Image 1 (cartoon, one colour):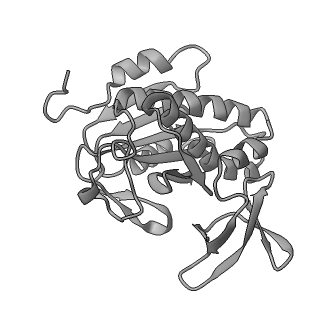
Image 2 (cartoon, rainbow, N blue to C red):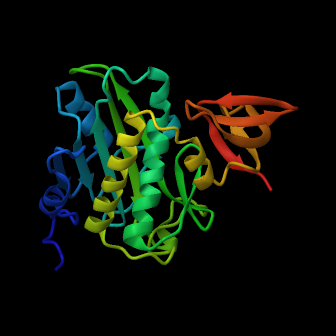
Length: 265
């Protein structure tokens, strides 16, 4: 059944029944047809004291953002914006928070495999690629107000974008990659996976090997773009205990906590 006009495509009631249960990471799921930015909405909610496990899904964003203050927008009905609010307990060292966007990338990859039938790969830190083209971008923000520190993790997943709607030639969508498009099932699968990865992270599980096995940046020459003028080139060898990309540059292994990665051939 198609949703009514101006109704969100993702069924929040169905998601709540599936995900909000005793022992679950998720406590509240809301869905809207459009908003400025799901991340901005949850950042505001975090400052107002919203609980860990709050989820917001939107069919469209008019003021979405990516890394380095880039604008992120797609035509209405062609993508999903999904943001979650999590408040890690105090014993988790601050340095390990760098893993949260990486875990989000792993969860999106798992969700796409389970719900859309797509085998995807990750480009460090958390771009999700299908056939070498970007299918999902992730933005993580920390909020130090409204209670214990919160992480707001946002995902922008291209679902039905056509070739002539792509923002750049290196982008793609679930439909273009040959995947099944069922928005509610996809969000459910991503959240189930993210809840599992998050609990493993909370318990201190070493996730380096699992992440490296999914990340196509590891084991190849890369350029790490640190700013418009500054970059470093070398061979990516893995990630360290804090989730930083390790790159061997002139015989010395260097860790990078941030930067745009370009895969070199």
